[in-house]
Amino acid sequence: MTKASDRAYDTIRSMILSGELSSGDALREEALAQVCGVSRTPVREALRQLEADLLVRRTESQRSYVADWSLDDVSDAFELRAMLEGHAAKRAAERMTDEVIRELTSCNKAIFAAISKSPPDVATFLDRNREFHALVLDTAGSRRLTGLLTALIEQPVVWRTAQHYDPEAFECSYREHADLVAAFERRDGAWAQSVMAGHIRRAFHAYADAHKGLNKGQAEPERGAA
Amino acid sequence: MTKASDRAYDTIRSMILSGELSSGDALREEALAQVCGVSRTPVREALRQLEADLLVRRTESQRSYVADWSLDDVSDAFELRAMLEGHAAKRAAERMTDEVIRELTSCNKAIFAAISKSPPDVATFLDRNREFHALVLDTAGSRRLTGLLTALIEQPVVWRTAQHYDPEAFECSYREHADLVAAFERRDGAWAQSVMAGHIRRAFHAYADAHKGLNKGQAEPERGAA
DNA sequence: CTTGGATTAATTGTATACAATAAAGCTCAG
DNA sequence: CTGAGCTTTATTGTATACAATTAATCCAAG
Image 1 (cartoon, each protein chain N blue to C red):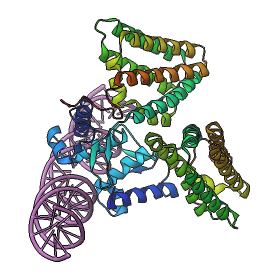
Image 2: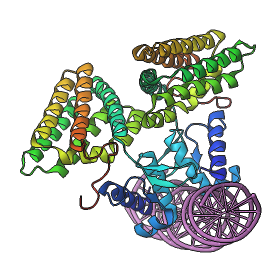
Image 3: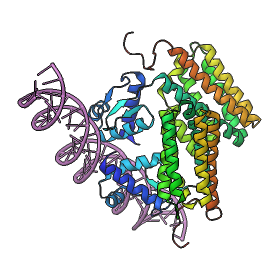
Image 4: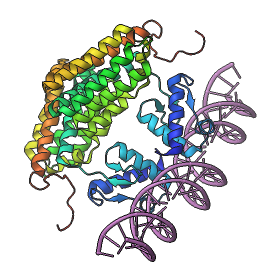
């Protein structure tokens, strides 16, 4: 993608993530084109990408809507992530180098610094967390695995979960990363896999707890003054 | 997708699968448009889809090429398929209905009929095999899982593997499906998962055996007199 | 010869007009 | 009222022209 289609992608994506567009809202190409300040062509491309990201769904008659995320869907996504990213951790352990271990360590140090602030620097936490997981995924050395996982990782749900973290949850995340590094140092694939799967599952429950009661079957953005 | 973009997709895809286009060949939109008898717009859409299918790769400068498939890549794809489709089988077992069991049974009967002919009716085998796996995937009831797997299942490698099956390999495939149905009848998720994972792994080795020696690091269509 | 850089050609990205299709509204028979 | 079928409107699909970008070529300086 290039300038215009990137712009369309980013704009629409952030409109969905911010809640400006709610689940089920219709996405009309012409309207989006005007909002994004581009023509329909790049908007169409962006919509296809967002559809692949599962942020947008298309009906059989090719109309696009903001995807709705039931708790079951979220649970699904995390379950798959736990499985795939656990597998990635195992492969990474088998292919680990000292160089990557140094990078992971330094990355996790930055995470520690970010969450030690008060209030915690959530943006930095998210960036570094992403970097940490990307490093593991890279080291796993499977293009296909990378492709499958990026779709799952870039979910709005994942992105928002950290917003609800309390200090203890951040601490857990940091410690689990440290455990992962320990498993990598021993080149222990099974250990790494277990830690990673648990790491993801904990994140799911953090999300589920935060959204319990509020949204019964529907995991949506907070809309308006509620 | 609709008429023109479907046509472009099917045309380009079969050109790749048939070997008319070899790994690494450049895919120019204008040229493809002429071949497909449509304009560049639907061709572009088809290329994006084929890229998602991993049949086409794009450079950083947005040029498209036929993807190359090393044996490692193929191994990767099958490994992921075994994991994901095993998971799907487990979920399917937990959600299985008698109705679906009947459909699976009838589907596998059709497979038996197809492979009992001489020569075996490979096309029907492939269709019914696809139907069988689609039924399992549907019953697993995870849209995300379905999305991830369809990309892996539609691979040229998977498609071609059956071309090299001997009568015994067909027989194995049939029996494994029958085992799967047995596991479903008992609603035994762990069993179903094991059988499915083994089923996929056997298919990989059938592929690997067929291509051993021929293509050392490169799993490509047969190209001319080399 | 080789190499750096400017020029040219080839290719992809974007906008827009028009065609095809699906949704919505409307009319009128029952 | 109701709903089947037509008409109208809204929305997406496709083609094409043009802009932007990337790759290839060529020429000159070293």
